Image (tube, rainbow, N blue to C red; front, side):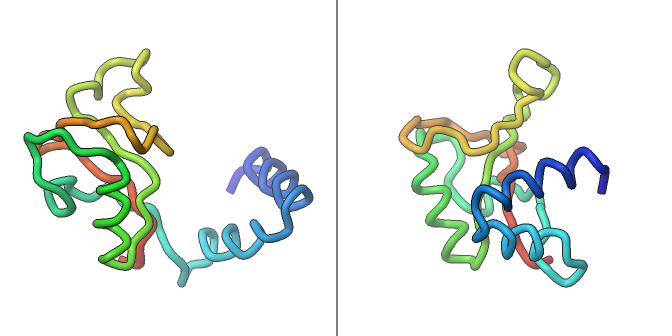
Length: 107
């Protein structure tokens, strides 16, 4: 973990002590990890779906949805290479088979 990341985490924990447990779990070898999983495992592709539905689908699997990766935007730096963390939940998106959901999960 870089010193810059540690500094940012300490600043956040100093503002909100409840975040300490989150960071401990994320940085613990036994804790949750970040995965990019096929969106098709969570929702039907090819139909407009809001992120509320995606979040609920992940929750039912014991995971936390934190973002998405849209493959069609993967080569566009202006679109953050297709990666969106904490997207607007009410926005409806048509997901493709190759799109990914970014989740916190245990393997």
